[in-house]
Image (cartoon, rainbow, N blue to C red; front, top):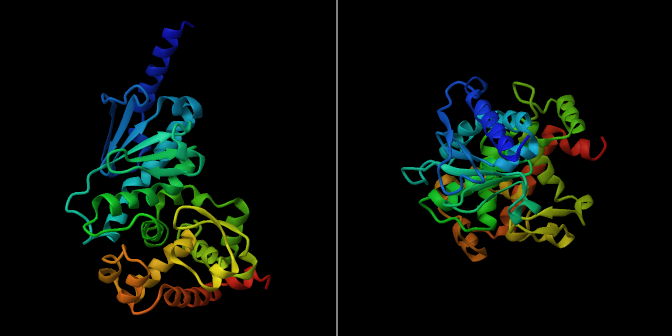
Length: 323
């Protein structure tokens, strides 16, 4: 087949696939699929418009995955995306601008962006939006986290410092406060043996999916145990670090793990309330003591104690200790 005809055939197949999406999406979704006439139409010939976002479909990403796999993954993500985004906005209600504009989301499964080497997705700012890397499953695992960055950095009426506080709140919203149905559809990326353990211990929701909050608090607890020393982890400062005894005994905010950060925000909200916590997501060590009357280390130690009790009640500590 001539090169020109191959291009025409590809575009015709793409149009036919897009025209068949209506029956594949859940009821209540407000969306439309249309040709992209913007400046980026060469790389992103089509877009899907939903209530909360504009999803740009990469031509090379479709070719990479194959049309069937690409569109199956897209439908799966769209089924829950707007619901998750609305739930995140509800968590942040009272601290967002009156109008939250739809966010632009781009597929980048072929890895054009440098960040694709390190992340499953990345928020670049209100103008450039969010990019999803590798495939739909990995993109789904991080999408609500990145959308929370959009809310806190681009739509909030309070100041949220990029780095530690920004990562902590994004983890809390996407992994604890919200069910995160988009990631749930892929079982939160858990391996088969992990899902088996969850089912055996009753750590599942009403539909049999893993209760990710159990996993999240459990792994956060593990970071404070002796066996976690020398473990590599992603810290809230957005750098890979190695767990040390010093960090466990005298933690610093910038050096805690993402999972510990999300749980720590939950702890602060439970004890001090949303009005105080959400208006002080830009403070340093001195500001923490002035705001909460305690140092970060004191607060974090209190959280660790509470989280350990929770993990004991769930049976996580016994399981980790081979009992």
